[in-house]
Amino acid sequence: MKTIRFLTFTTFIFLLSICFSSCFIGRNVVKKRARVAYTEENNAIPPEFGKKETVLLCVLKGRNSYDKYLRKAVIENYKGEYLFITPYDLIGEKYPREKYRYYFDYNMGKTSTVFYQNSGLSSSITYKAFFVRDRLTNESFENGASFSYFREAMIVYMQNLEFKRLSIQ
Image (cartoon, rainbow, N blue to C red; front, side, top):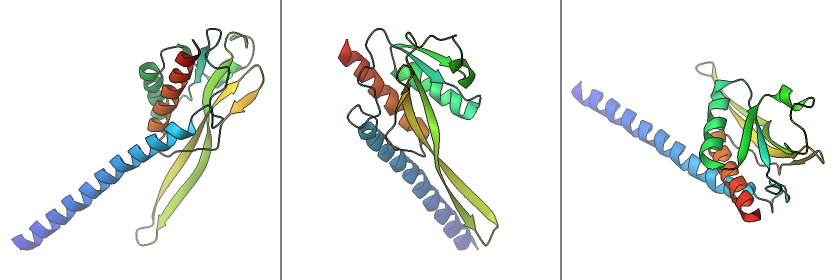
């Protein structure tokens, strides 16, 4: 009986370690892909970004599960001027387009769902496709890259925006 418990415990620990290592590997893969995807060369950063004291508007969604990661990614990785706003703030003249030319947001990408027949449960993964939109030209700088580990992708996007901002000045 003790042997069976030990084998069950050992199997559980082994499967748990595989799960944690796959998450770690997945996040590193996302960071590498995002570092390449979110560049000016890949149409993710506007060529004019960083000129004329750019103030980046960052759109909050009213969901703590997303907003807390956006706030942290911006505060820790983007050192230029920025403001956190709601989607409704983009309407009207509260933020003039000349001063607040760019905003950061995302589109919902694809969703993958797996249904487990034996248990009747399902699991879904939603991908986010981040972009910067130029409010003067109404051009969206997005290249189709979408990521399920959106926190890591956001961090890399902010780092790349900061790098672009510094390279202009």
